[in-house]
Amino acid sequence: MNFVEKFFEQARPKVEKGQKLHWLASTFEAFESFAFVSNQTATRKGAHFRDAIDMKRAMTVVIFALIPALLFGMYNVGYQHFLSQSQEILAQTGFWTIFWYGFLRVLPMIIVSYVVGLAIEFAFAQIRGEAVNEGYLVSGLIIPLICPPDVPLWQLALAVAFAVVIGKEVFGGTGMNFMNPALVARAFLFFSYPSQMSGDMVWIYDKADAFSGATPLGQLAIGQTPTSSVWDMVTGFIPGAVGETSFIAIMLGAVLLLITNIASWRTMLSIFVGGAFMGIIFNLIGANDYMNVPFYQHFVMGGFAFGAVFMATDPVTSSNTNCGKLIYGFLIGVMAVLIRVLNPAYPEGMMLAILLMNVFAPLIDYYVVDANIRRRKNRMKVSVK
Image: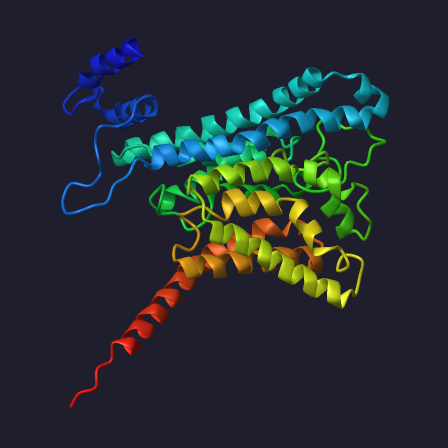
């Protein structure tokens, strides 16, 4: 790595203040911090607690946590394609052929997401004269994972641009946004191009016409019983968004996030509790087939698990108080199942549930803090003689 360090040392004087390339200072710092740990801290005065976890390390851990869902998603894209041709063709196709097919379909989505998103991030950083934050490293990978494998790349590029500019940069950049940028991108696609985000044709790349291609949520929304077994939903061998199908792969990422304390267990747990609570209520009502779906089945369908692990736990857009995290997560779980069952037009309720609670997260924290202040005041009251 000495030659890389030497390269940055030689290039640094050219971007210093007063030099011709000073306008590229933010870009230079971004690449340097990506290659090496920064020797500078943002805090200059006062007493501060610091540990080994900075934003760069936190984002790196999240990316590692996403790898199981990404790799399985690539395999499943190929698996669903060959399965749609016929069971015989799938049986004759080797593991690496299936994976390579999915890899070649998902890789362009990732490239488009990073190229468009990072270009906008770099441009805003240069205009403002600020450092480029590492926040988009995670968002840039999550966005392709929550999209269908058949989404047109130009639509994905538009969604990324909208999410970064409108969902993030207009509010000041990383740490200032009040909505999850990845979900803003998906919402943009869902409402702007519904035919590319719903129906039976979009969840399998190059699907044979005779094959259904409907997701379990899509089948339930039109009153059909899912043809996939619960075990298929747990393992992930079902049509769906690239990284949302495998409950097992998502939980592997959840374990890493919890062990490293990057994500809050309170938020994750309360989401599943809220989903179970609403699901059990619907099971007791049982007015239609959708209400009779076992509550635990909601956890392994659609983006429930992925949203609970990777998006609802975003520290910027979620509640920050311990009690607030429990309330925030519980309401997400309740709203996700509620939207799924009562509004067939939006079979994937997790996206809308998280975005809605992103808006109310500051309000939840406000009332939690206010209640704590009033409770402490009551304990500290001293009688005046």
